[in-house]
Amino acid sequence: MAGERASTVPEDTRSPGRSKPRPRRVLPIIEWTCLVAALAAPLLLGERPELITLATNILILSLLAISFDLCWGYSGIMSFGQALFFGVAGYVVALVGRDLEFSHAWATLPLAMLVGLLLSFAFAAFLLLGRKTPTVIFVALGTLTGSYAAERLVSGWQYVGAGNGLSAVKLIQIGPYELVEGVGFYFLALGLLLACYLAARYLARSQFGLVLAGMRQNEQRLAFFGYRVQLFKALIFSFAGLIAGLSGALFAYHQGFIGPGSMGPGLSTMAVLYALFGGTGTLVGPVVGTFLIETISYFLADQDAIKQYWPVILGIALLLVVAFKPTGILGFFVSERERIGSYGGLGKRRDSAHAAGLDRNVAELERRR
Amino acid sequence: MNTLLEVRDLKMQFGTLQALGGVDLAVSSATFHGLIGPNGSGKSTLLKAIAGAHFPTSGTISFGGREITRATPSERSRLGMSLKFQITAVLRELSVYDNVLLALQAGEGIWSLLHSRTRNALRDEAMHALERFRLAARADELAGALSHGEQQWLEIAMALAPRPKLLLLDEPTGGMSPEERRVTGELLAPIKADCALVIVEHDLDFIRDICDVLTVLDQGRVLDSGTADAIQQSRKVQQVYTRRI
Image (cartoon, rainbow over all chains, first blue to last red; front, side, top):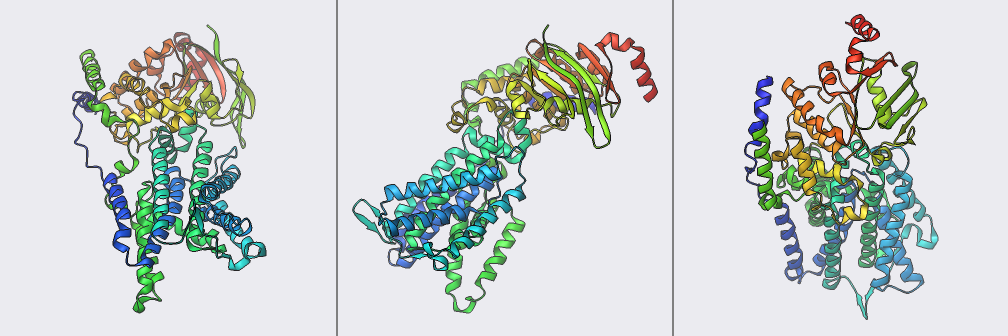
């Protein structure tokens, strides 16, 4: 046994340059397909304004789903309260519109992001930044409770419209233009989704993202390296809150309405489902999930024969995916290895002069042995 | 030689069980210090208390002249202490290279990590750490694909990557073949120049070969401490070991 083991070690080091052919990367293909489809959609749907509205809604809710993916898929924070940041930011821009008659995007959208950021940071400080490592359940219940309490609070508060919410939200203004729902709003949402997506992607693939990937697997190990694990979590949670805030503001402007349900556990759970259904830990998965769930719901709800049953059908489909394919729809196409990815840029290293130096070093080791 | 780590009158009580009953230990820099003793003698408990995995009931631990008795593991790590777990805790779903990168970049600020400022700068150092433990050719593979012995080496490479002043090793050769054990000894020897080592190990031959000083624990107390030769001659130690065997 000992002999066998000893002989396998040099076997592997003997052929350092040999690397298995890299499997084709699927994620970029999916990302580009989604982008092209999103750009082309207004042309194809031009005749059907109600479908443009649906598509805009999908883009806005995708932001919420991505914000959940950053928490759970990337950092292992089970947030059942993403809608809280979404809803509060939505209410804030609606109130600024009503009370101050102000809705210029250059100020209200950053304001919404700031609200999402600060509120989620306050939550993170309470839930994550204690001296002891909080459990997943503690964080899940904490965020869920926050979301539920906010929904109840708003439902009884006359100033913010109580149970009726705030309707006739002032239209969003960009320069001299007021945007109603339609192609203009669609491209505004698409541009912001793209910007957030790229920022999240940059973060997830950076050395910071490597820390998150390590944290998901073994938090204690990371602490022994010297990482302040909880601080990393608080930062990512706050960034996710910022994106949820932006999403909520766009939602309020687009719908012209924001109600208590937009900050409660119902929508929070939808964010979880979008991401799980599409595939967490991929960023593009939540977008695909949101698209599928919203599109299927829209068309099923329209069919007279199954109108009443569509939530049941959708529920069963979601249950099946979540139970049998924890990596979601994208899990059928994207390998686990690709999903986690490499952070050291080794693919490039293989082709560089460094590889030649490495080969020499390994040969030297071999010689010594 | 100056004292790097000093443990004074350390007691550890788990319910009614006294795991450590007043242990003193001094480890000098550039020394390999072995902790041996029968099962349940408190070796691992002592190592964990030094690493900060458990806080002691009483007593003090100081490191590099600073008291760290109640410092968190990450605070200790930033002072230059590094730990290799008894059970391998490599991050199995990350590549071998990323495991080492993760260990190396632990000292970076968050802003620098966000912008991946040191991704290229650390490459040579990471590859060097892997070469030292004969893992360079497997840098691209998932850590979970390595053999048990190789995972242990990867752990040691990771623990050494941030250039600690003190490395704590909990049974590094557990589950290794004799050949892998021999190689582990070879691989560890060169680190003495810049890093002290506290090692808990069952394999007495292994520990005698690589350690300068041995401390023998029995029932939570220090039975004897001295050079490997002196310990081998020690009557008290012989009594404990023959009694157990």
